[in-house]
Length: 319
Length: 295
Image (cartoon, rainbow over all chains, first blue to last red; front, side, top):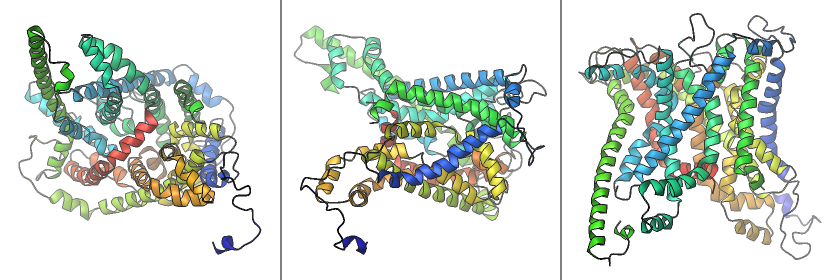
């Protein structure tokens, strides 16, 4: 520090007397960027490139130290008939679309309900409804596994009103429905909050003008609320799609991809590409194949992200 | 409320229209109340259930004949504290704090560069960040697994901290950059006019203003690490090294033998977050808004 104060002939602060406005290229920026750039390069970019390489090898439990280049073998296996890729991809896309749609629609409905002008105690509902978001999902998903157990509390409650036991996590359709339901429980508070903020950003005068024109409730929604919300929420919508596409944690924790798609199948009916890649690493230990799946996931997600930044203009606005 | 009803100088027909408008709104609001209360009850059910069961005496099984426990006790908590639970709590704290501090401090510098400095490739860098942020980390898990096993970092907390802290440092940059963009540039300009260097402007002008946001970012990152299952479960295999969320799986999987212990663990492991969340919620929502909503 003291060195700086010495009257050495370093560049004067204001050579021309004019305020120094660093508008142009500042090499110093690289110093600020270096920590993130280097660590991201070493721990994200390099591993990804290495994963790319592994996707073309037979690295697995059986070839742990002496794996070799096998060309497109892993991809051939993925795209061959009966590999499970198509059914898994099918459920991944279904999951991605339904989870996103449920989340956004529920957030929108709740936000609209909560913004009813006569609902004075809305803060109470909002605070209570936000609680699932405030709890760590790594624990609440495990709680749900118990709640949805065949002899768990949900079936007990249903039993009280005379509904026979539902094997929530054991049937293909019911397990998928349970996942979507639980995921909705986890995510709606976030969407409710975002939608409420988007709703309050709509200028009040528009509704007043609509009132004067005698617009119906539906017309107010169709011509004011909906277009405003749509433009405000588009970036969130696309971000959600890519998030849900790769959202593996909740699925692994609740169903672990089960039940099996058919007896003896390698993949389960609730496996997405992401959970299947996880299983390939965690239990099946076929690392080469897992790497190939990771690359497919990478391509889809970066495609969605690039689309997002093109649609929302984040790219051009970034300047 | 009344202001929305428009001019009151209207004739008798207008007045009766107003009355019916009011009645309709009253009916609406009561229907809404009933729906909302029902939703609140459904939504809170898992939480209430877990807290009740964490206090349940007698059989530790999920397969209880009654929904509401007959006898309340703190035994489940006592059992928890005698076991590996305290170690898992410690591991979670070490992991979360380590990752959050590394990640946020590195991201702060980069966010400053993106928000205030000019350099070639800035636009491309921001797009790159956005892609990195949405990318599931485990897209590269195979390579990391391989390299960590060669370097002897598998099954160590250090390995996980390095990976999530350093490797994930790009994650917070976009959000922090948006935060910093909201600080008026006039302040920097004034500092420059007074002859401050880039570093002084960063250290003395901007940093003090964004401290609350940095704290929120640390909390958010901490919660993110706490919730991380996929990566951590692949990298750690020794129960002594598990963070809480993964450690308690041994309880939650034992529906018949350990369910009430799990409920106690889930209660203890969630409660601090409820507080952290509500403390930081205002900032959290604000920050998310800036990232997620356009215009």
